[in-house]
Length: 397
Image 1 (cartoon, rainbow, N blue to C red):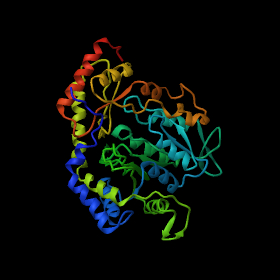
Image 2 (cartoon, rainbow, N blue to C red):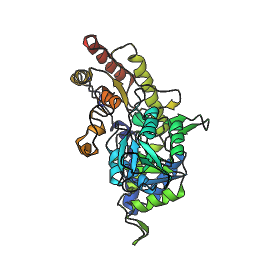
Image 3 (cartoon, rainbow, N blue to C red):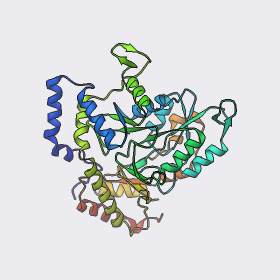
Image 4 (cartoon, rainbow, N blue to C red):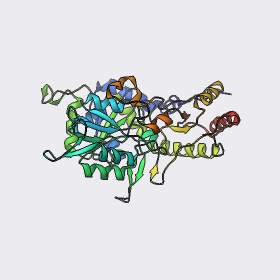
């Protein structure tokens, strides 16, 4: 049996090799390596793809989140609400912007932020300061200023209630759309299918190579309808400059390389097709695995059109199944095996095991199966057969 990789970063790049080489040749012949027309053209196209007015290209998704927080006015000592079941870049961006993360548990079906737990946090652990008219953490008296819903695995969080809650409590919403390029959400409020990156005040994307839209290295971007936010992030990415050697603020070196922008613009033309292929593959997995009682396949609510950056199943026999698949040349992944509140990096926050039981339970059971547009149906059948081969002897979920 031939090895089935977890992700294929070779085939789609070879298919578009000549177009990519043209990008390199253009950079070589013009000397345009940072900023310039290739970056501007990609920003224009990606803003349109996300149904946003502005896009600012950056050098990583982490910078996209961090700069979004700073530009949105999150200050040192503020509290930003997010989830513990995400990659550490989400919380890193919060702390590196000078704020503190406050975790809220996830919904067991979607793995995104639990709306009721969010309400519970705001109602029981926060209070209004009548003098400043700001929401404060009731215990520490620190301002609570923002929510970062994470669109995990390619599925948008339930944004209508999140936006309504944010409006009620005067909170900024920053979408972590780093895994959700092109994902859609049916809003009851607008009665439209809204695109990831078009609903929060500002949204962050990662173009790490393995993402649905991936660069040939690190890259990221923000999208927003707010001209002032876009302008602030342009300053932040370029050492705080308004023009060369004129620094109004102290910024960062967070610019998007021109070659990466050119690569991304080419791949963006294929995004809708690739996302549709991922959706078809997810449906194929759902059907092939539907009779296995020992696993749970992803749940996609009627208001969601997920783009399956990852196809994640759950089983109580996760380690044994992963080992079995590996022995049969099928690569898998874990996203993510240790929730953030239990990471050593965040011991100082004072969380303990049991604080977020849904995140903790899912972290011990989730397993990401091979998922990429070039995955064939025959390969999916092989994956499903090996899973079925394993489960007669496994515990049920």
